[in-house]
Amino acid sequence: MTLFKRSQADIWFDRINLLVIFTGLIIIIYPLYFVVIASVTDPGAVQTTLLWPEKFSLDGYKKILESENLWIGYKNSFIYAILGTVINLGLTLPAAYALSRKDMPGRNTIMLIITFTMFFSGGLIPTYLTVKELGMLDSVWAMVIPNAVGAWNLIIARTFFQSTIPDELLEAAKMDGCSDAMFFWRMVLPLSQALIAIMILFYGVAHWNSYFNALIYLRDQELYPLQLVLRSILIENQIQNDMMTDLSSMGDQLRAAELIKYGMIIIAALPLLILYPFLQNYFVKGVMIGSIKG
Image 1 (cartoon, rainbow, N blue to C red):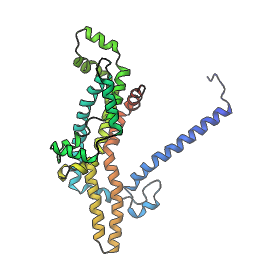
Image 2: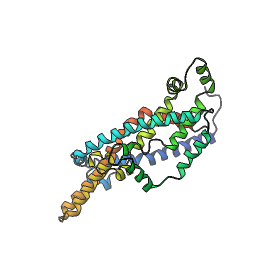
Image 3: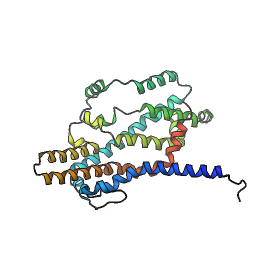
Image 4: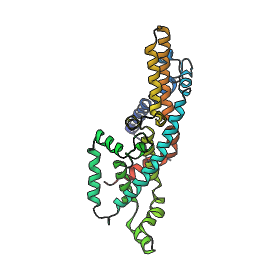
């Protein structure tokens, strides 16, 4: 039973809100939907496609899947994403917890230095020379070590620990003879599932989409991640188009290149689209808790 009668102003306010939300949803969702239907539409009909494929075609996906390098790229991207994320978590979480402890000497100075790196970095050439001197060029480590700890993620994790792990819990554990390392492993980590999930998402997506580091540090094509492999497939098709003199064949290849472009977007994003629903429950909770206090 309704206790208060809604006024006309309230009703119109709700209607306008729904209209704005629905319009925003269409603006966000439709470009993604268009990429999906464009990837299975005949290239000649893409310009007239609005809501569904005009002429269904899988030629773009066939050309992409014919490339053996595609599966090498998938394998390498999975390795970089899993290994890199494990290293990221193994360094970020202990460092953030240590910096969240009030009894750690010099923690404010350390945080100031870490925050400084968010605005001023060493630059591309010094970073490249450092990676080269460490012998990591053309190796898996060049993809996972240089960005082993993200300053922004470290700050989120530190704030999460400060606002979630009470000092009384640590004092009670110490009275029972628990060491700092044991407390972190057996108490802090089980209470930080939302944070761990959001860190996996942040770091995992960054590694999966990593493109620039691979372009700079890798020369061996056997180590290329998926993003570079897809770029190579697209460039190869464009080169073939430039070498053709038959206008009709060139037109067909140009249309095929358009299909490949849309198909590559789907193939590159598919693993993340599958992963995200499993982590979305932790997404808002992890970020909001980590942003309450600075």
